[in-house]
Length: 546
Image 1 (cartoon, rainbow, N blue to C red):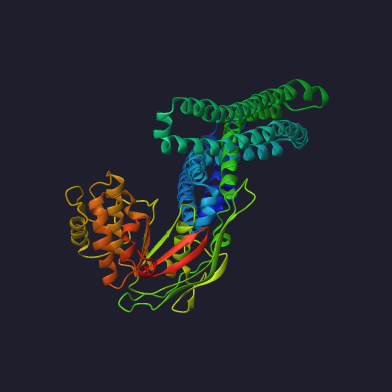
Image 2: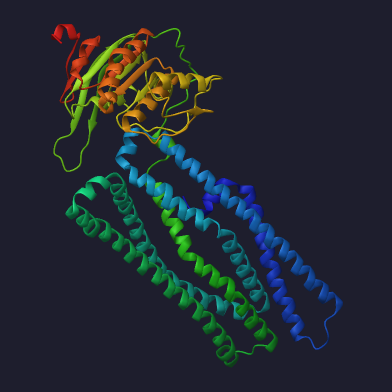
């Protein structure tokens, strides 16, 4: 991905019109220089034709310049909007396991740092393009004035460009290193926000984190940025001096080597002086353009290319909740965690399980036994590495996995609570939600209006109740709760196990509960126990003397 392709993909028509308007603006600028030069070299007062030509060129340049900027500003803003939406869609379309491997901090750095860099720089692209158009038009005018001097000037220009590009390559590599440190910085920022309590409670840990982790990474990023931008500054200063060197050669060296008419000489000097301003702007923008190129490469490096990451298709099938399914079956399903710095990998499976409507099933086991991973496999968030999943003997694959996931309503242990009831459409949605607020004993804390919670600033247990409310409103065939009751007080824990779960079961829902609360195991129809990634047993609790 590069900047031009980003703009071209956004709107080829807008980009073409903007380029044409920029070329016209640059052409008018060169025309004004030519007209000024012609007027200065004539020995008589300006004619009416010259005056009107000057006014017409000024007017056309004004209109063309404004049109080019407006078109490019609209194009730039649309490109940023499209990029943000595209990246968000790619993230949501990518497999969950891949996102977990990338890491939240890298995704956050891209969505904030990289997109922010691109957004801020793309806004100056209109001026960058217009200045390039002016420089090109002036060069064409200089070539028209004298081919010999233009060829000599181009040779000098190529030497100057080469001497400017060498430090630019070095500066770009330094900015890439600085961007790599940004990922680590965001990782440390996540540690600050998520580990505040631990850092506050241990002074030496806090000081060590600030000195050895955060400050070291921040200094490394600063050092690469400072050196890289300094190289750009040095190259820019060298580029500015080259203009005056070019004028010196034109005024003092070339006349001694070949005969140059004074009119040509003055026209060249005037045009070069005029070109200095747009060229300085171009060189001043190059560091930002380089940052954008680094940011775009960083976006690509995530590997979130939709066709490669998700070949799932949207199925037109619908699930009739009134006509319950008959069976959900996992056949030899397995999943492997490839852990760095460890000789062995954790393997879950092969798992063979079968679920039916109206069953209440507890999934139990020690920490690290694979319960949450199994939940993600059952709900379609993880794709089995081996084995198959069948719903009513229909194999779940890329053609129907999206549809399959819509059959589940899940509250994970690391759930996220949205402030609005997104995606739920019902005329009496607020009334239904209010009834559940009463049932979940939250009506004294939270109100709901137009599908928006009055607050989500609650205790973890109360937030889990709001998540449960959302799952109730989804009314899916299969419910899954991952350690839901772990943050509830004893009274509401009792309500959850003895009232809410049996109520869901009585409605024909299949309920899968990951839990350590063995005092409530007796209410389950089945207990599935995992041990080291394997199913140790799948039995009725009555047979286990529970």
